[in-house]
Length: 306
Image (tube, rainbow, N blue to C red; front, side, top):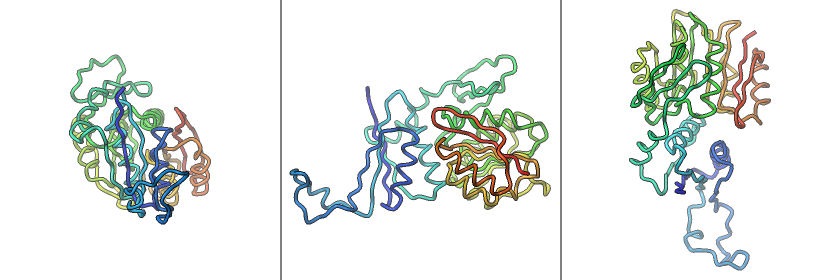
């Protein structure tokens, strides 16, 4: 089996955050941190200290995981890039053993039509799919943006979107990545959909995917909900945030300003061990928990504004 090292390098003070993000993908991580190394030593436990280690920049550290060939490396890279952008961490992402052009295109062979929830079928733009009765087909060309329907966080979120978005709703997708969740909401009959992302590449991809699905959706660049506008002065029936627990907790303080009374927030991208923290933040800011779904250590949650 072939493996590719996926390495993220950052300032030492962000190492714990980087490791948390990487461990969302793989349990085994490799950390390189020489910030506490005593450079006056010549040996450690009887072994000589390599000069390259003694001369390493101790202000930076790295975390690596190893991705097997049967997994989509591009999906991993996109997931990490999205989470680090949300956390405002500047880091270098390297794929060792696989050049950029290769990982940017090789993932296509792993991306096939995928059934999500009860009716959604996510179909890559280069595949041919014959819809079955009651299928809701979403054509996707995710490019470098996260969200293809294959990751647990996206599947969980789409399932809750399918169960909660109604015809006529106004829907906002925060950190929208590939735009898949906003497109799903629009195809369920939402009257107005908007999506925002801090990454310009993601915004461009979202617009292309919306056009591919003949969906009229407003996508724009925003740091979370900082630049969110109201269509016709109306608050949103549904706000979707498939991000990470820390960002959802931070967003909980003012997301209620964008949700109508009785409206809901669908939150995903949360490791199940942090569910209680997200619950506490949302409940203390005027929401009550209504539903939850789980898959492989991840959870997606629904909160209703009182």
